[in-house]
Amino acid sequence: MNTSHVVERPLDPRDFQPALPLPEGYSRERILESLCTVSIDGSATGELLGYATGDCERFLHTLALVPEGQGELLEIGANPYFTTMLLRRFRPDYNLSLTNFFGGAAGDAVQRVRMRGFDGEDEQCDLAFHSLNVEEWSFPFSDDQMDVVIFGEVLEHMTNDPMHAMREISRVLKPGGQLVLTTPNVARIENVMALLEGRNLYDPYSAYGPYGRHNREYTRHELHQLATYCGFEAEVSFTANVHDDIPADTLNMDALRDILGSTTHREHDLGQYLMTRWRKTAACGMQRPGWLYRSYPSEQLA
Image 1 (cartoon, rainbow, N blue to C red):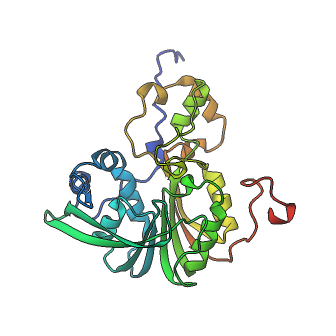
Image 2 (tube, rainbow, N blue to C red; image 1 turned 180 degrees about the vertical axis):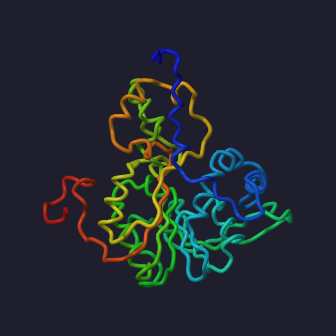
């Protein structure tokens, strides 16, 4: 059989992720139209347009990971409040607690958010939050207080001690409580191509300081190692592409297909983000995982 003219289908991470979850009766375009109007503390409407446009699908996947229900929900790193506003509209029975960290001392503050709501009405709300450095300070919440914690796009910004944050998350979650954890996938298809072509995949230095960049991204396997050590059991785990900015020649590279094809199930781990939900089922480990930390006394490493 002559196969010289057979054209292989492009290697697209979207083929291995769930369909985009949308609230019933709402389209992606309708959700995006509202998110593009978010204004914080009087900033110009549309200032966050690029962020809203580029990551709208990630916000929708994150929302879908939050179970419908009621109780106490902690969102870590809530600003710029896209997920927060989705939660207020589509998970209204949760009592929300929010944290941010812009430097400085611990304390409480408020930011005013304005937007054109998902149902077309102008909205304004004052969102109270705790100023909290999650890898250094104790969380200002009681043991077993939270039913759900959202740790979305924060883990990759940790500079020194992500285990501190994970231990605190475990502490404030109720037994059986759920952790929604999302973070960039360091093994995404764009990074694979960058290394093959001799390009660097590390994040540039940021004018916002060390927390303004991605300091340590994770593979899917590493995230499972970390969460399992911290006493969590996976309920949902997939990688997702949410940006439409992968060059077509990347998806069609024969060399890339051959390399990835030699690794079992690698096609499921190529998306841009790790989208996960976990249930707290055990106590958090109190040491530091040896695969993630070094130069500590041996008794402090697991």
